[in-house]
Image (cartoon, rainbow, N blue to C red; front, top):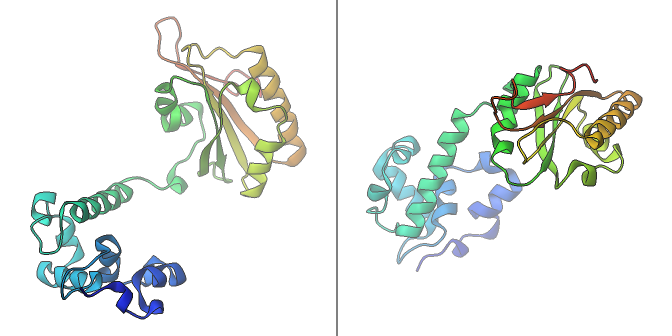
Length: 231
């Protein structure tokens, strides 16, 4: 069996990718990373080259249904599944806007960006969204799983994240699994402390939003501290 390991180490696709970045690899080399193992007479790179010759381009190959992919010589169910998943990830990534295009300059936009995700959780999750000077998303991450009161004994940890990533502003957001977004006394205390800390460091606390669930008894499924004049 012809193997990738028969290729000099510095010329192998995986080593080249790690050394030079994925953009340095040819389409056949990228395919070889998914194919991984060869067959008698062909290593994974040669299989990738043959598949591209037979199917003209990577785009044409990506449009094949898994049932058709699986009929290609040297592709079994496992390799077919990996390739189909990779093509689908590429399609989804191309369709989604980048964080740089997502502007969170109002509570409704913040809610639209992350609210439904938090509403689906059965536990409390605390997130921070870092923003640039245009209030576009730099990054969003979960900082704690559990109650906000447990999460933040001091605001410095959240402010440190904003400073490390050179954020101009940040949004604190968490959910109330009960469905009622009304802030607790602890929510209010922590917001005051974060506001004071943000003023000291020059990083803007754009908002603190609590996500609840829709109900006839309330106009909105969230509570915005900025909207209520509490920032």
